[in-house]
Image (cartoon, rainbow, N blue to C red; front, side):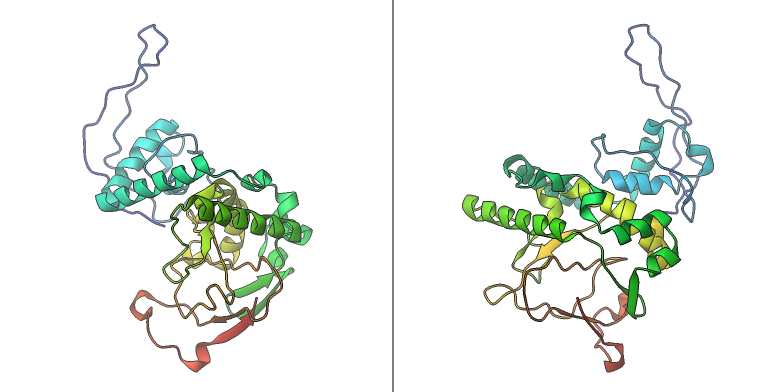
Amino acid sequence: MSLDGAVERRKETQPGTGNGNGNGVVTAAVPSYATHRLRLNPNTDHKPDSYEDLQLEFSPLLFSSLERYLPPTLLNVARESKVQYMREILLRYSPEGERTRVQKHREYRQKIISNYQPLHRELYAMHAQNFFVPSFLKAVVENTEESFRSIMTEPSPGVFAFEMLQPHFCGLLLSEVENFEKWVHETKFRIMRPNTMNKHGAVLDDFGLETMLDKLMEEFIRPLSKAFFPEVGGSTLDTHHGFVVEYGMDRDVDLGFHVDDSEVTLNVCLGKQFSGGELFFRGIRCEKHVNTETQSEMVQKFRL
């Protein structure tokens, strides 16, 4: 992610905000940063603020990620000033229609979370020791390409296979998804499926798992992405689309050729007994050739 553009010129100072202590003290005026530009590349050494506690039009993770692109003079200013600066940039680059869509989706998600009763609440916050196998945790702690490669195979260039999740966690997650599907059926609540190709499955973020998945991305996927995919996001991944899809004789039976709209894809087999389950990787596509026919030499078969 990179937003590189001059900030619209505006007044050099804006009214300060009272501190509410009844003494008439006013905080310093928030300066304008009209002449400052975002960095072309993120400052990966900077630890950004958290924006989870703020009511914002955009994802808090987007603000944390964008903060790494701020010019050096803005990195240590008050969080409120950074929010104002980044928000104005985001509003300029985000069409009104897209903001409306995001707001409606937020309302849809909140309606589900307000009514659905989770079955396994321990899934809704990150508990790394209970979620991940020890070998994966050790590799993340060491956080080097060598430590990651020590637990992986690479069946095809850019495709990595490794053990990651505890079987108990996979069982709990499957049980939670089944409980959610049961609630959907009983309440006749109309949900959005993960994509236009699957008629069965659920978006994990939509029923409360967003916070846990944020941590998964920030603390465990980003290190992998930084090591193996620095050219397409690396350590700056800031959004995710987490979902579970189901296949079976009375369900979807397969998923045809498609191109993931993502920088990095994590495929996880949650597990019950089944036959089949092959994945076919057909290389990386540029925007111009998203729907181009696949050549035989591009197909790499892999059983998940």
